[in-house]
Image (cartoon, rainbow, N blue to C red; front, side, top):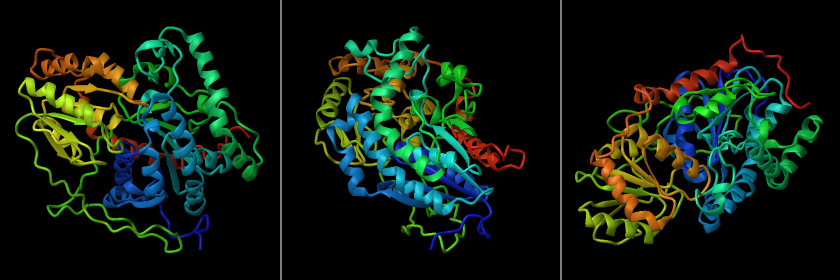
Length: 470
């Protein structure tokens, strides 16, 4: 039986979404953990491979994408390419997430006591906000790549060849035209039918167009899960409300490795709150994560392509051969394919907590996901980024521009890039942090985000604000 709206016995509840891989899940879990400490009952919609991470943190997992479907999508070669990757994310991940998460919102939302927290791929929550005037929605952005800035646009494609000319800096008119053409030719056809159908069916709302231009931003709150110095041009543009969208607020990097936050036995110090038994939630055995790999003592290069990618054996083998010439060992971290490479200069590991490992590494070579990028910045570990798709090109460009590492634009430059990385590690290249309080700010980011989200339910908020685009 579904929970009725306005049911008694529920104090405060948060419904969060994390439809992506571990780099998407960890920061949302960190925020959920802080909300739980504040007395919220937290539900998180995730893909099945990451449900246990949610439960280990004392939150309630709602599986909306099963393991077989998720693995099938991320194992496709086209998923990790610039053009086809974006299409598959929108048509396969976001689309499969849409209806199940919308159903969860229908079941769990209680007016006046429920905050909704939406990942960028969570269009269900934005539709729910439109058709439910009592809903208070926080849109969270893990990285600046999807925030449009015509004057200085984030990099969405490789910085080489003809793609370098797409969204060039300093050409605002051309970039506005590019955004417009992308909306009408690709993004709206992929997203708008399901979104507009649901808006019309539920509340008779007129169709919205150019969904990723402004509509997808919450009218209540938009949080950037990265510091201002990481993308100053984005904050300059979004510092004030735009149309129906709220102003952008920075909370910093919510660093989290999915580690146990509890006693010596590894039990979490946050227990799931008592839930109404009429609300169906997926029971998942709760146990602390096991990180059994010993931390290296020989200052190796750490290489990873992320938690969902199945790895590139030829690339890591070449890295190992180049590093061996300098007397540097290599650790290959590939959670989806541990032990997949055999080489005398490679040690293979599964998932490891980067917060513990990076201070003991000479450098890290990775894909450019925001979770790995922010961890390396926080640890002060030089990084070499070899981006494949999504926000990775933008993160690589920012890391290079800020002096935190090297952007590998083509594999033919790998040897020189590794030499540059090792030079940074040896102190021949000095890159001071952008702000003196970078580390401190990062450590409280999840708590800051949780407080802002909780503030959406404060009586002083404009509870009568109607849904946009009616």
